[in-house]
Image (tube, rainbow, N blue to C red; front, side, top):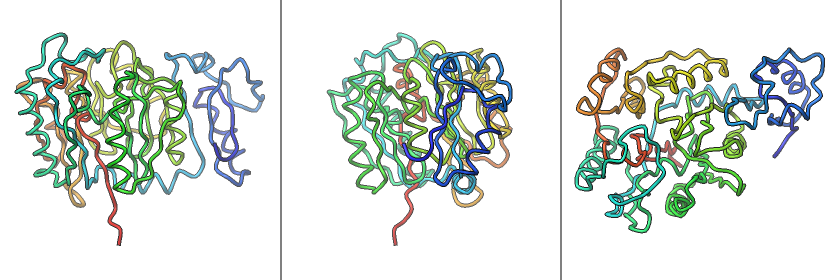
Length: 360
């Protein structure tokens, strides 16, 4: 890792000492967290709260990476947040109907997949990407040997011209990455791969707000995976959010623009939102929906002012549709994904969205 490495507890209250050291450094600094028992804290550091004095490598403890020089880059990313030119999707294989995964149980349970219905919903979804959002859709062929490969959103985290290929917790899913990697390289993105064999990282655990990253520490993603996000996107603060059970972070939240977090109503969702509010320096508005799966949406901007939100349908979650009406001047597009949800999929996990600048 380039620059000076600062070791710190996971407390967000240490920033004043960090800032002093940053101002005196020539190269960018990367802050990483190590167990607090190994750190002799200077007396000049503000007192840490009791929660953050615990071992930050514990899944239940949030912590933060922050790097100097993020201001200009952050403003640029906020101004382009939601703007996309391309989408990568993958056709549903026949084996999807018989896939056996340890997928999260947020939506669907043990009900068998209706393969015909899954194909219809996929067709509607890709049609929205093409016709409503105006994206160039790159459709990968189905692979019967990769039953869950339709969930391409788990395989890459993209911001700007950098694409971080993930390392899914399920070993068999790692074979899905090569096809996505090829497309990203053809689009001439800077492709970064997770080289740490101890790291696990699912894209559905990564929430980018336009200003910063939140990474869910879950069954699917560990701290070493979160470190890979911080290392790949050094211009942004990266905070970890503990996620209990078998859920991903984005099983119950998403962005409805750079200022608004859509969040579910479960205790898990509320706890995660509270953690994010404690870790961020920015005030986000929240839009709460009764059903956690309905909180996963796809936000896009068309032109300078037009905002589009792809959300779960009224047939699936009738009580969660009304809250979206509070969003002023948004075009709301319902889309069902009942069948991919049975394997832990969400609207956002069915595509990889890219904003590829034209090369002149």
